[in-house]
Image 1 (cartoon, rainbow, N blue to C red):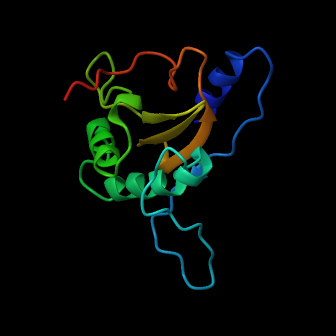
Image 2 (image 1 turned 135 degrees about the horizontal axis):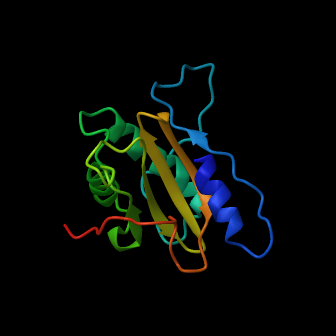
Image 3 (image 1 turned 60 degrees about the horizontal axis):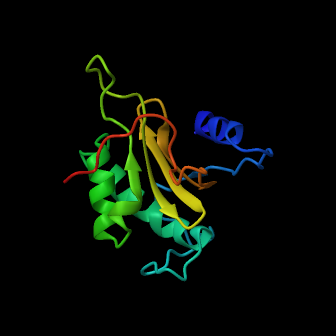
Length: 149
């Protein structure tokens, strides 16, 4: 995720502050812990910061399945949760030589910002963050796979 933040910062005219990635909770908070409740659904009136806990909940749910290293599973889960599929991007599950990707990134464009998630063997627990959108209208830098299903 730090690589993505660094690449995004390099694409702007002025340096932007680095958002702090939010690790996705894989356990339920105890009564002594506090957690921002996820909204029951997101809408156009929801800000990216308000949508992030909901996005994180979907990521955590997919992470808990045997499809945790499949980008399509995150796109399908986010779509089922009401996020706009046409605003999403996802990287490839495999490297160019056919090895499993060390990490997969996926995003949802949210106005001028992006909800970005990263999972994979090199990532450890899933990470989600709100990042500034790119001037190109995209969220992720580099090649992404077509979402044509």
